Image (tube, rainbow, N blue to C red; front, top):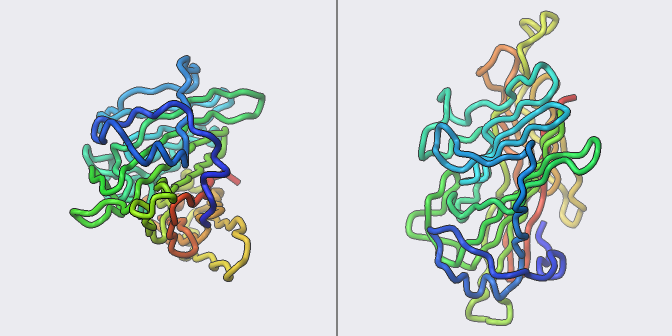
Length: 306
């Protein structure tokens, strides 16, 4: 669902440095003050660290929860390439998105990634904040931020805009990843950062049905489940016009639940990648998203062991 971004995301701090691929001055993007980037914490917590992905060579945030469980987030493309909940001895629950066994340098083969958001180049994403656990039972958090001037083109992966095109208006986006021992939550905001007071620079941005996609698995099948059939393809119903967007959820495979709010049109289909059960899935906006100047779309998905 779209909402007014200017009134809910607060005032803008100092101008935000952009990645090298983008112009040094975002112009109207900064002037709009739509989605201010929060300054990153200077002191890193031991459970939250940033390094280089050994496969892609790009920056990667690694979260290791004190109570067990870990995940790894590729900064470029804002994709999750590993999620190991504490349960079941930290077994990997994400599988390659493609029919390959590992990530391919230069590709966006992350196992949990953005879908239909190619207007945001992979290399536009930067780390905004890193947060360790603040209270007992609390999550570890990494937040990524992206600013894209109108017409900007760059390295984009799945769902990329057609060649030679870019967003009609400047975009600002935030992806926030929160890790608990047996749960992973991803929150996403995308805003049209055009100055709505300037009619010449206030076009709408059509994002279509954007959201997330992934490939997940259960652990090795227990003996009681041996030979059991994989769950059939599932589709969650779309909300009626004017209805509040509820949280939708589906069991992707034995013991693993996917829930979505905002990106609540969930579809899944069984995958034969593992003997214990696996599924490919998408969680998208229930209807095409068109953002007027100053509007934003927001939503979240979560993966949780049940």
